[in-house]
Amino acid sequence: MYKMMTPGPTMVAENVRIARSVETGNPDIDIDFFDYYKETCELYSELLHTKNESLILSGEGILGLEAAVASITEQGDRVLVLDNGVFGKGFADFVSLYGGEPVLYTVDYRREIEVEPLREYLEKDHDFKYATLVHCDTPSGMLNDISKLCPLLKEYGILTVVDSVSGMVGNRVDVDEDKIDILCGGSQKAISCPIGLTLVTLSDAAKKMMEDRKTKIPSFYANLTIFKDYYENKWFPYSMPISDIYGLRQALINIKNDKDILKRHAIVAERTRNAIVRAGLHLYAENGYSNTVTVFTIPEGVTAAQIIGLMREDHNILIAGSFDVMAGEVIRLGHMGYNCTEENMKETLAALNEVLKKLGVKLKAELSYFIPEG
Ligand SMILES: *Cc1c(COP(=O)(O)O)cnc(C)c1O
Image 1 (cartoon, rainbow, N blue to C red):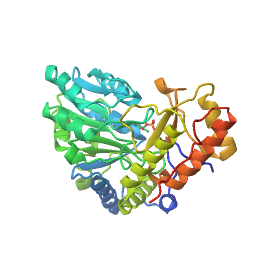
Image 2: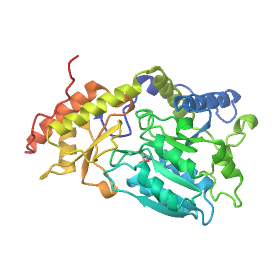
Image 3: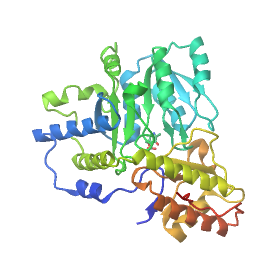
């Protein structure tokens, strides 16, 4: 296997892989599994600092985003879509798909969404049922400060839907303090499981919005109310992917036991950014750096495919380009969850240094991960 330093999926710890391989029972009929599922959801909620209920859905991260929108959108609802990245803008498609009217609040993709300009905007127009916001917009590595933006939206009575699929665990998330009504997570980013699960965390206000609908949710799989009373009734709406959930449970335990996890992400991310800048390469963003991914613009005269290809061929390390409007513009180095160690970034940047030199890129200094003394 190659070393996988992409911004999701990440490498997966051995104990998570082992947990996924143990013999499984029947999750529909074995009543003990309902406790296992519920306790796993509660552990996840605990890590996100909330008493709000979380649900594990069988489906990749996108399902969580779609389910959030499908469950609270009705025909003609105005929805504020905060857009400073590919996933940010992408919410508008889901809103339209479920009959809502997305209103885009777009800012420069190189900059985080700032509080004061948004406040000025909301002063003039705050007639929105809910707002969507991406914590870490992975294609550009843009981090938005949900601890300031969500409380601001709530001041204007706007329910908040946050995609923190690639933000959480590597960047601070406090659902209650941040006033997040629906938080979307995924298994394959900093949680460091394989692809396959998405998690949604629901406030009472979000649940009430679903119950107070005048029209039915036009979906089954993306309908979050189908989980209502699953525990009391010992009935899941569909058979649960039990091996994935065994793996998730172990990954969450790993995160809980890793007391320095946020600090490590902060240090590794900062040292990675410093290395990029010292070498004379350019970070894509001007501010709003996520601690889970570093994104830099592709130096002149070379392509993403060349860099990614040589990293794989010469060094057996997989890194990422980007997609949508970011395609061909940037290279992305993932340092999230299980990937996020000084050793991994040291090795990755040393390899990248060789690759760029081989491609004839002139660097101001060696690209290397530098650990200051003391
Ligand atoms: C990875 C990710 C998702 C899940 O979607 P993919 O199909 O894996 O691209 C959703 N939102 C964000 C911000 C992500 O990084």
